[in-house]
Amino acid sequence: MNPDALRGHMDALLLSVLEREPLHGYAIIEALQERSGGALSVPTGTVYPALRRLERIGYLSSEWATVGGRRRRTYRLTESGRKQLEGERSAWREFTGVIGRVLRAEASGPA
Image 1 (cartoon, rainbow, N blue to C red):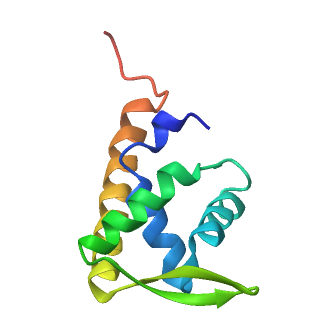
Image 2 (cartoon, rainbow, N blue to C red):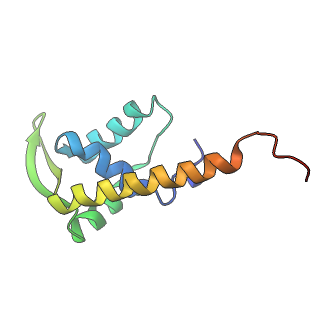
């Protein structure tokens, strides 16, 4: 998938992945890839700065945990993050609806 297509949608993707359960950074990257059927391969250099930014603005919280014998920072969606995710989903539905109407290949009469 073209990385430019993700621009502006990374926050919603990360919040969505964390909606189910807290995850550490690498598990978030794996979840994005799995949930996208392999279409999304997001580099760590994109994910980690976004996670830190989302934490700074209060959409995520984090704590250190031991996972598989290694210390990792685990991220969790906050209540504020849940509200933001709902807003992101609503905006996405509106966006895709508008774009879908424009891209439909329907006969619309004389040009």
